[in-house]
Amino acid sequence: MTDRIANTSLAQMLINSVQQDQGNLTNLQQLLASGMNISKPSDNPTQVNNLLDVQSALARSSQMIANAKDGLAMLGVANGAMSSAVNIMQQARATLLSAGNSSLPPASIKAIATSLNGNLQSLMDVANTQYLGVAIFGGTSGATAAYDSSGNYLGNTTSPTRTVAPGVSLPSSVTDPLGGSGGSNMIVALNQIVTDLSSGSPANLQSDIAKFDAAFSNIQSSAGQIGSQFQEMTSISQQTTLTQQTLSNQLGGIQSVDVAAVTTQYQQAMSNYQVTLYATAKVAQPSLATYLN
Image (cartoon, rainbow, N blue to C red; front, side):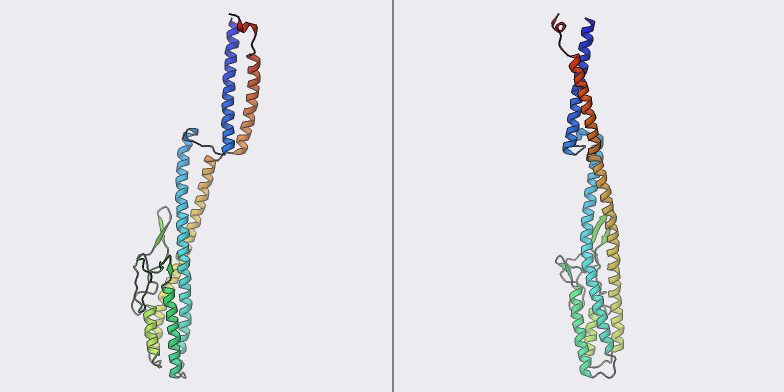
């Protein structure tokens, strides 16, 4: 009687072991099939919180990268516009200086005025460059033009910004790059210079050059500021991209199955299952005593 009880208990233990091995094999098969360590919260409650934290951080970094891309696109347009403005004004200055040639007849002076007026119109086009339908140098006003033909500034002084890192917002353009509505505004200065030279006389040339240089200084300063902003946003964007890569690796470490390791576990579990199944079959074989009471 004692032997029958012992054998029955041993058989039940082995059957339980077989069932546990089957469950383990099923779990490992699911891991290999899905490639995911966590398919539902109950799979690993402790890691679920870590997973949610990393996913949230990854979503934030993705949004910040998108913000930086938009900011860099805007700064790229602004940088190109300011580079064009500098080139146009360099040509205009050389033309203006040529008016100082004392041998030039009035008709040539007037021709210089016409050329400078062409430079003025080109500058107006650049200064009113648009990005997504609004003036890129108009701040956050939403104005479609930053300046009118008299040089009056039509925007506001609040630079548009983009959030590119936690707690970090960077400007994506400059406001009023020509320097306001006074004499140091290049539109105002060039309008006056064109008027002065249209008379055919360079009598006011020295004061005109002084006005031009003061206004040109504003343009060069704004161009330098845009370049600096572009470099800063590029640097922050690269750092955010590296952070995103780190978070992606963390997410993979939490969520993705180590296929090689799980395959090894599966092979070992299959071996254990086969051994247990064999032992169970041997112990649990029915005999005549099984049916005797």
